[in-house]
Image (cartoon, rainbow, N blue to C red; front, side, top):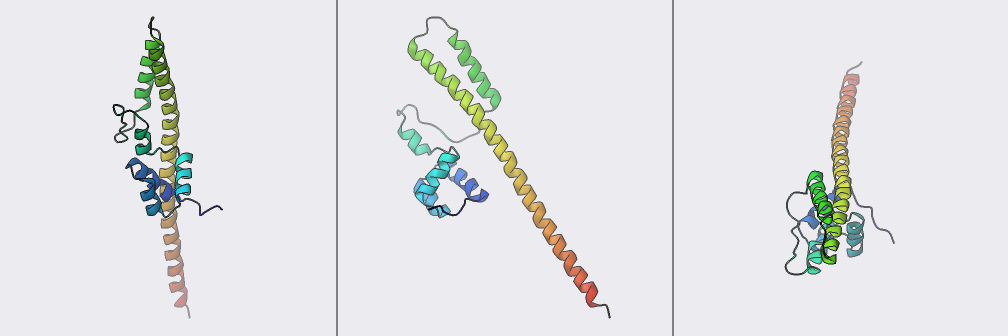
Amino acid sequence: MKGKPWTVEEERRLRELVKQGATVAKICAELQKSEGAVRNKMRRLRLVEVDKLNSNLSTSTKLDAEGELQSVEEALKLLNAALNALKTEGLDKTEIMRLRTIIQGARIYMSLLADYVDYKGIEEKLVDLEAKYVRWLKEKKAEGNAANRDSSFVV
């Protein structure tokens, strides 16, 4: 059975809560959504639970989900450095796999970052259009009220 569609505001709040490291249970309670709905939306939006990700890593490789996103330039520099390092002769298989993983990760990151930047721009335009529409409605309502007042004085 399909539930009520997610609003833009609910998706924005979901992103905030995941970024803050909230548990799925807390997110479900705050958004009044089922666990399945929250997990499905997180999957579709490619959001990752930091605790779950960290639990799969060794103790020396904990991830920090706070802070600014890397720019495309920073990701390209990392990609370039890894590509250049692959040119080094005598690399062992482990180091080659590590560098290839960095390259693949940088490529995926740049793709997701481009999607995110596009999404943020669209979201900002939508919020702006909504505000303009509300102002327009208020103006039309005020004009209608003024016209009604003027016509009531006609004898």
